[in-house]
Image (cartoon, rainbow, N blue to C red; front, side, top):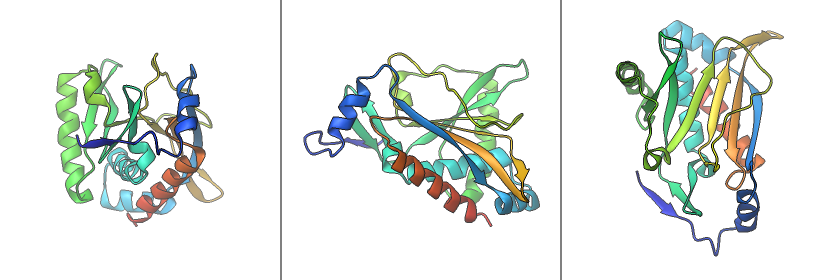
Length: 210
């Protein structure tokens, strides 16, 4: 779990960080309909897991944006070398557990690895996480049952700084297949320009599948 602390004396967003970090609700978020028309064709033809494919692309995209790898630790900003995903896994009793995945590998290796890790997580059925173990995580969830235009996420008190990325059911609009993807980030670390860069990187990761 490699990371380094930023020099707050030279950090260009120091005043922004201090302001947003003082708020009761310091988050910024939005939902964007992402075009998955061509990637979906490849996913279907190759019979890839839709969830794992999107999760891989989301993880790769988020890791390309340094601000998505930054966390607030002891009121200082730490930037991680790489962040894993922690996603919710539905269980048969209607509840869920957590599963951690590392996308730092080729996609062909990721798919079978992700499947194994998720099955292992289902057996453990745990939602327990130590505070020291969550800093390098991107929190992932999905709502495959419905499309949506906005999403309100539950957040802790005091506020944490892990990005939350969620996607819903894809739908067809004017001949294109679109999927709502929501992002929620700590505004002390992330601005709109960084969220826009995430969506740009996500489009790029999706295009690489085709």
